[in-house]
Amino acid sequence: MPDIIAGITVPDTDLVREATSLVREVADETLFNHSRRVFLWGALKAAARGLDVDLELAYVGGMFHDLGLTSTYATANRRFELDGAEVARSFLLEHGRSEQEARDVWLSIALHTTPEVPLHLGPEVAVVPLGVETDVLGIDLDEITEQQRAEVVAAHPRPDFKNRILKAFYEGMVDRPDTTFGTMNDDVLAHFDPTFRRKDFVEIIRDNAWPE
Image 1 (cartoon, rainbow, N blue to C red):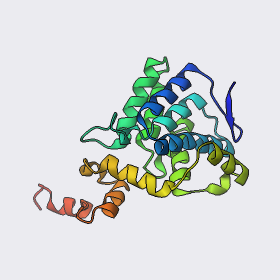
Image 2: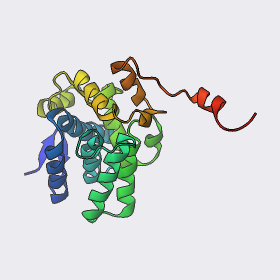
Image 3: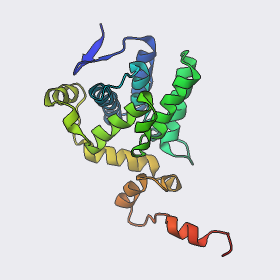
Image 4: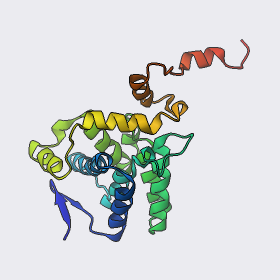
């Protein structure tokens, strides 16, 4: 029987079940529940904005978007967003989805910490950032009714979520600080580590190898 939360039907397919099992195996409760909420918030906001979204693709995007913060899928020297994007692309291709569909989900995950840009790249790209900005930043909560919020949080609670997700971000990036340059992720490292020094874009321009 399909799982329906706040009016959103989680697709009852082998692909979705396998995606859920994969994330269950590697993510703790905080990341698992966050990822499910991201799918639900994204689907709700897409519906509110009149976007026609493939819910299987949205589900994989939402569920896989933070896999780069897990020890199983984290790499040593690239952005955590790219780690999850690569896993999602491979997973979708292995399950018979097209290259374009896999690419759209890759983009949705790779750009989920990049403000505004993914919202202009099509529904399957926009849906993950829409869910992330809702769950993590509380942006445009008025697009989701109080009843919908209550149903989603009842299904996937957020105990001490703000502190727990910040800790997950920090632990997932602390060993690859250079990957946070040019992103909001360096705010997390600066918050937890007073010795962390951000790279400065202006200094890079002024001090680079080009002669004046």
